[in-house]
Length: 307
Image 1: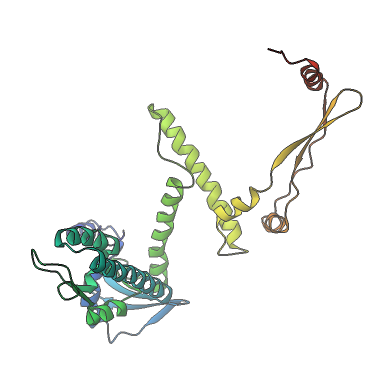
Image 2: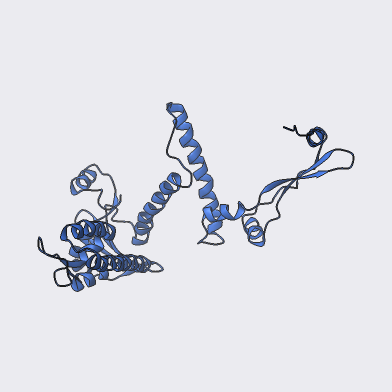
């Protein structure tokens, strides 16, 4: 379970019933547990991932540190802060009235999210004009440093006390794969909206979407062996350029020769087909039609009506 979902009462009930769990904890717990884990050594469980363990009476606490996640969280926060300060500067220049300032400031805070809590804002008093002296803002530097120091850290707690730390971390990261699966079903595979009203048709709709996801997951697994950063969507977009066309060639004896052909793969597409061990079928045989050409000639020879 992700952080924020399990409560202390829920975890106590699970422990009493003998149900094992591995859950994340809210960010607020991180600062409290950090002092208790200062003297614990870091253990590397994967490239760029380190953990610290703290054995508690009923469970095991795992403090994980990810370099990649730290850089990502810091970059996202700095980007939001940059946009927030740009918006505050624009408000100071374009909002002479306090009421309009408060309305637009609420929108900026919503867009900035938690990053807005790192900025101290002094608002003008009621009926006071908005000027650089009455509307001030500054970064809470100490709080900003404290938040950035905890970037990339997340705290796990589990009843699986005998499990090695690398296995616990790998198990928890499965949550990201589950979230990605739901996102794929809802976006790429269009599992919703469901327009059916009968239950069997709804079940069939979900079954088809799930089978499509299984094919997508299989394609992702095959591509991961050759290019870890290549997604199933990127592969399908590349292969979608291979199209089927019909070439119509009229013959001298009044018939029409139709050549169904698919376009030749480009070098990038041929590379993907080779790595995925996929072989295109033989080009379809040509077809000859007499009726279509006769109808076309009759249409061309018929004079248009004149007014």
